[in-house]
Image 1 (cartoon, rainbow, N blue to C red):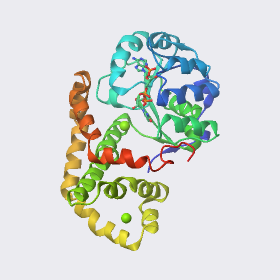
Image 2 (image 1 turned 180 degrees about the vertical axis):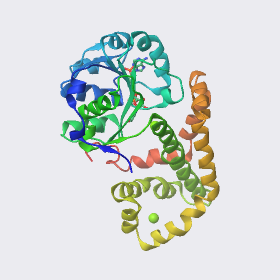
Image 3 (image 1 turned 45 degrees about the horizontal axis):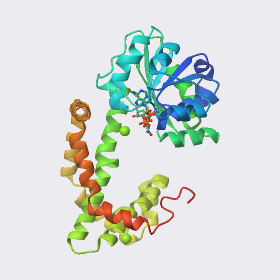
Image 4 (image 1 turned 90 degrees about the horizontal axis):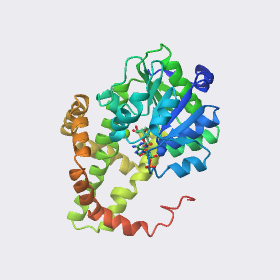
Amino acid sequence: MAELFYDADADLSIIQGRKVAVIGYGSQGHAHALSLRDSGVDVRVGLHEGSKSKAKAEEQGLRVVTPAEAAAEADLIMILIPDPIQAKVYEESIAPNLNDGDALFFAHGFNVRFGFIKPPAGVDVALVAPKGPGHLVRRQYEEGRGVPAIAAVEQDATGNAFALALSYAKAIGGTRAGVIKTTFTEETETDLFGEQAVLCGGASALVKAGFETLVEAGYQPEIAYFECLHELKLIVDLMYEGGLEKMRWSVSETAEWGDYITGPRVITADTKAEMKKVLAEIQDGTFAKNWMDEYHGGLKKYNEYKTQDEQHLLETTGKELRKLMSWVNDEEA
Ligand code: NDP
Ligand code: MG
Ligand code: MG
């Protein structure tokens, strides 16, 4: 069973005794920086020249300096910029400002796990990753609650890296909900596998294949859209609230019977064998290498795939149908 840590297991004064640099002010960056500050932590934000989020950070009362200045001032640097650019920013602005005893923190293990960032031996290397988007992390914190987080230590130079990670997690509300101990390897590999095989890749491929099957059989695209995409949210909400059991309790017996007999015909032993190959390519670094080559090579294939799917009948149909559902993009709904 996973090891869980709560508020009582974490000492806030550890992080309150540090100078923290949050590099980036996007989804995670704004949530971490604001909640650290509200927890009494000395925090500055590091942003590049011409950064669009700089004005927002300053408006919200934070001091913004360059990533290099932030890293020089701080003794704990949390890197919260997009994963593909972290190695470059690290080389240019962070590595030259790291001293023995400093801590380098991440919210995703990608760059450390695959060796794109190789921190020096005298530095603590840890991960604190809330299991939710930044806006939820911040809102829960403000409401006195928290989003569960995972924490890991890759390199324990000081001997206190895990206590420091827990203290950091406490300052952003993580230990209010619970923090699970993991490793950089487990976090990175499961995260990549989940988003590729199940959450993003698996789910969109399943939706597209179902939609195409109905449309190719002569059914109206609008009807196919509702059946294969729109209603997925209702099903996933039920799973989120109470697992497969609650979903099956809520749907009809006919739907439940179809679930049992048809699910395994669609997601077959072959699918699972392919999932194992996907996982192996994540584990051996093939995926990471190919993705970084694609990213730094100008995202040619990435943009082709993107355009292809933007023009898919599923997407053009959905765009029109969503206009009939005023509540769908209404934040008050
Ligand atoms: P975002 O894409 O939201 O980060 C964008 C921020 O990075 C902006 O403030 C942007 O500035 C800034 N930025 C871009 N380039 C630079 C640069 N060269 N130097 C300094 N700042 C720069 O990132 P996320 O919050 O999504 O992800 C951050 C980390 O958190 C990643 O490691 C990710 O894997 C991890 N993570 C993300 C989660 C999420 O929900 N999004 C969940 C858990 C982990 P500007 O736009 O102003 O130019
Ligand atoms: Mg991910
Ligand atoms: Mg139905």
